[in-house]
Length: 309
Image 1 (cartoon, rainbow, N blue to C red):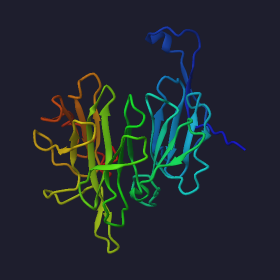
Image 2: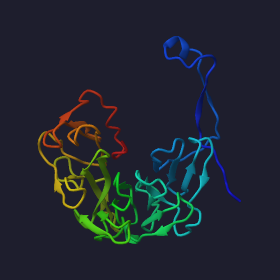
Image 3: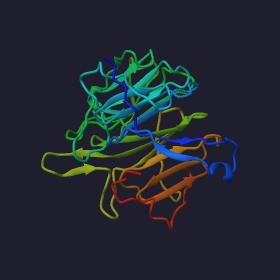
């Protein structure tokens, strides 16, 4: 029997008019349509051109689909019994029947929710094909080319308890039939974030962090180091859609540590970039050549929890 759920959603009741303006908005009232639930949503993606169609992945709850903008949800990954941990999901912008899922949830505190690689659907989630990369264990980010559903970039963290080469950025040009590893930092350093602007996908950013703890308790997660020493948190840039990479340093960029989030702004020819971490929010307007801090006086940006920004 199909299961249907509704996530916690708040809606607005329109009392009289939909015209803009403070006076007309005074009649709007928020109400919770429930049901209440706990836990994190680890991955989301929308279907371009299909209003109301979204996919949500959970750390141990599989992948769910809504076709009515979140009023009801149905599971679409239950046939996969080897893992239920979702780290990333991406609907191909040029073909919404094609969906890529990276398994394994990224956070390393508490339970480690590992996956077994990448899955693909070509029928909007009705069926799934396993595409390999089993030993990547945790995949927190996926990019699919805006015009070619067969060109895919995958960020891989790897096994937290084993040093291995199954970390970095993996790239496919044939829809996941074969993969090439194009970025590799170290056997204990994973890639935790990928970003590009859909109108300029040739320019890609990748962020790394330390993702290894040995059985004796040394090592760690998040790329922390001494107050002044090197860390495993690095920023890389590609200008050929992930084929080759170079590390971005200097130019006002702060000492990177912990987990970071990155973004490339649309309509800027990939020149405006953002980077945020416990050290603050930084912006570049020249493709990463120079950076400036945007929030020096606002410490709410740095939350002190290992980079969960």
